[in-house]
Amino acid sequence: MALKMHPSLAVNVGDWIRTELVEPHGLKIKDLAEHFGVSRQALSALLNGRAHLSADMAIRFEKAFGVKADTLMRMQVAWDMAQARTHEADLHVRPLVAA
Image (cartoon, rainbow, N blue to C red; front, side, top):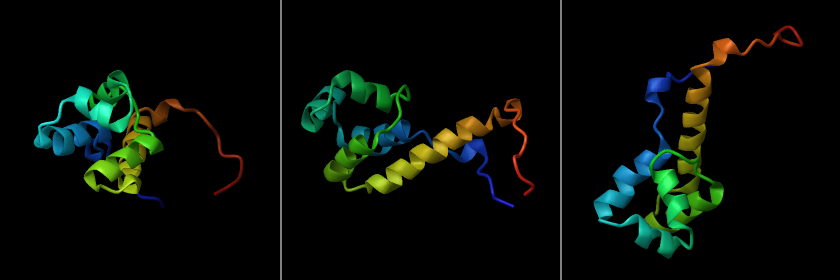
């Protein structure tokens, strides 16, 4: 039996990055976006939970702050799965083979 993480334990990676990396360094989104070579809108959407973290963006954060991109991507996947699990009962799919 696979263990499932309770949705309340998942952390939105954009929110985590904002509160644990960006804000403590006193960075403005505009300045960080320029440093990363991305649009302010794209970075703002990520940090405010309106966009998902891409692998490329995770690598940018790794290079800038030293937090492993793999760790950030695992946080994103955990968040995505927790959100999907909140409505898994609505997904009516029968098994194709006996487990």
